[in-house]
Length: 201
Image 1 (spheres, rainbow, N blue to C red):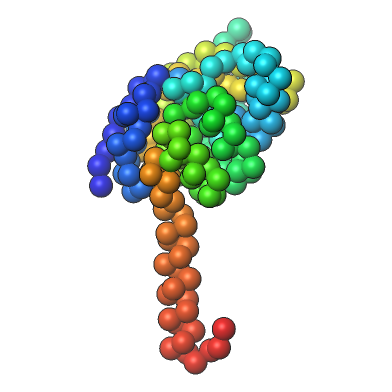
Image 2 (image 1 turned 120 degrees about the vertical axis):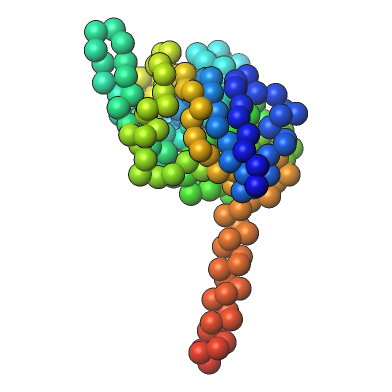
């Protein structure tokens, strides 16, 4: 297993190098986006309306951060990942239209996202759940916040990060999905155990 360090903007050639199980650290521009932000961004893109931040070559973080404001400056207090399956219905089109290069979240994504990752040159990475405060320590600066009318967790938080990670590659640009592989192995093992116990399925 290899370790990769990327800085935005990230090119397709670079992001096609990691494979499932590899580790990644990212620096540069990371933009939080949960389901409501995905929905609005796609509505804007379909209508040809400008989106206030470019995702092209950047990192999307499935995250609803907790932020505090001191004067005119925001600080991220906690930045734990959101369960990414919430975004599965949006992600393939989001990748195609808005061209992010790395998606970060937790708990994996499905077949449509994996196919889009293969087609357009994207990787999905898991960040450890429960490490929200540690994640915030890798955020150097809040560059801005957009669509705050959606609420703090659903807004687009534009973050500058430095060596954010380690992230585990669980969908690579070949379309391989580590979560699916592990689930398949678990099902095989379950069948073996039930057979040993004499339990019919």
